[in-house]
Amino acid sequence: MSTILCNAFSLQMLDLSKASKVSIEPIDAPALVNGEFVSAVGHADTAAVLATTLGVEVPCNRVSVKLEEGTELIVAQIVGGRLPEGSTTLPEGFKFQFVRVTLQ
Image 1 (cartoon, one colour):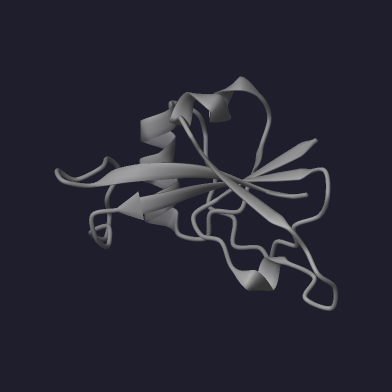
Image 2: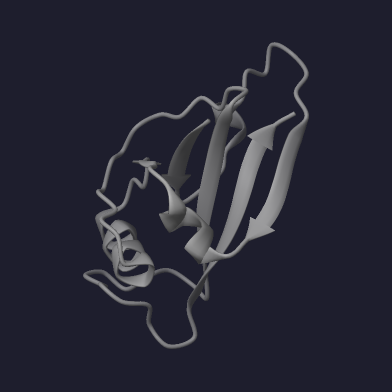
């Protein structure tokens, strides 16, 4: 199974020409660092803060993602507002909420 780390989920990631069942499951951040992942985090500040939070390299990589069976999408949703420009750590009152998105 391949794993993609991103900062948002969009219906554009699905093949809408056919019906799909999507599973969304809250997870803990440490689950991310147990294996390899491809970054699809499209904002440099978000990638920097994620790298600091997770303790692993998270490159900024603005790419289109198509979710397929066998692919695990880990969404790091920022909660608390918009990150201030130039952030490298989570500002007070902010947190990441992590969810695993898969096709069933």
